[in-house]
Length: 625
Image (tube, rainbow, N blue to C red; front, side, top):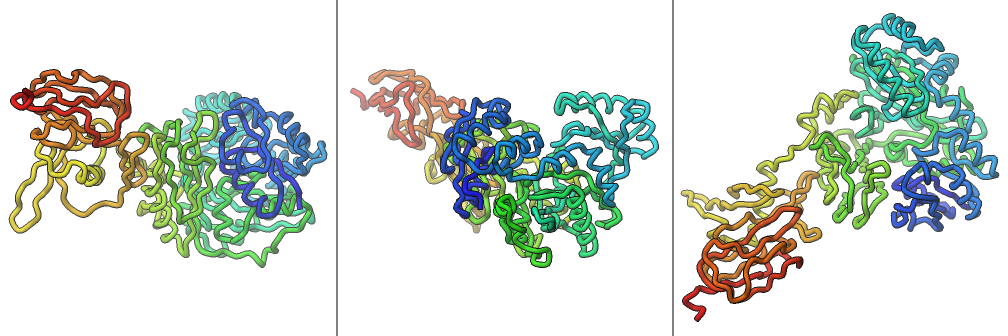
């Protein structure tokens, strides 16, 4: 077994590799940028080396710095994780030339599968079915247009060196082809330095199905069954699962055999994934599934395969890289239950999935499932790298049970002030079409209106906030009114502020499974994967939760005192502004409940105060004398 391992990556995959390496007794070395110095993967490794500034180009993509760190720490091997340099054949060769073990695919396999057109030609020669299309050398606009016309619209223009959804354009008509081609080429040149493209038949109702394969240095190759990654947004995977819904034994046998054949065609060693596109318009059929590409590395979604097979794929990687044979033969592998993985991102679906960065004052992830995360509460999501906070991974006996478990897990996520897609994930996993297995790559686009949460609090949020405030305000006449109903309990009506907007609420019905917490001086409600800051509304006739009789002005919420407008001993009139309190960039003024004098002044501008603290006490003028 490898004695020491440098991990040329960061975040959750670095922690994932460290976890298995520690179990096997392998010493781990982390490399990190300066902004990642306090990240969990750095502190969990046995040793860590800073390799540069935040820019990935000057740190995680700098091959020389990584190799120098390996030499300085005496590392025996390098694991690239996924992303960054994981599919860089030149880096793999440099690692091997330095006398180190490369925990990844052979450089020749990376090169063979690195260009989509060459890979498809190779697969055709190996007898692996590929999507109908054009992969020729003639890149003239007229030739590409004529090939697209011959294939029949819609077609997909794809960058030869593409990946991650970049350099791809769907074209529905011949008239739209030229503009789409120009746009695709510009993006491909900017992203990959290569503007060559190929043309594919665009599959209507497509399913994205991939097969996990593994090879060793003795020539053995096995598959660990398939995953379905059809739930995508802008070609980026959102929820993955294993096995694929609707997959019968005959189709599974055909697609997995094709994947093994593809791996053998490039003498593959290590973990890899063969990706297929399926025309599922009439269900999954072996004659309607075609090779798309091969990922010559471990995949982000590998945990779902681990869950259904009971295998540790990182352990397999380290054993194969150490020269050992595959841990199991094909006949020893079987599917057990159903697994799903959702990618929890620091992004706000309400604003079009814009990234959300900043400190993680609150980070509570479900404790009853597998969670792979690269951050912890008190850390930070920076703008420099992938915004994934965690992977939520569930396993259950059936698909419906797994979907329900995933929906509950996503709904229980609590993150603040960074915004996440947790509510979006919960809604997707609970969607009736999803639970019924009616999925394809257009699922999110079709259901977007129901999947994207509203920016406005609905009745469940209002009810939960009101119940949270009820013990604080009691039945104060200035914030609540009690009505009467024959043969029933009275309603309780009150006003609450949610994200700076005042709402009238009538409390009725059962309590909801919400969580309330004070985070950095703010009161927050967590419900169904969303976070809502809340407080009592501005009181024009009272301060805090007290009536006018005692004259005590209490802080209605945690916050900072912006200004104090009176002095102790000052005479004030009813409704006169006394001070201004701020929380979450929202200001709230507190006013005198009656004519009187400032008998006590405990508020000081600039100070932080907790909820319920007395700030000012007003005495009636008749009693002041």
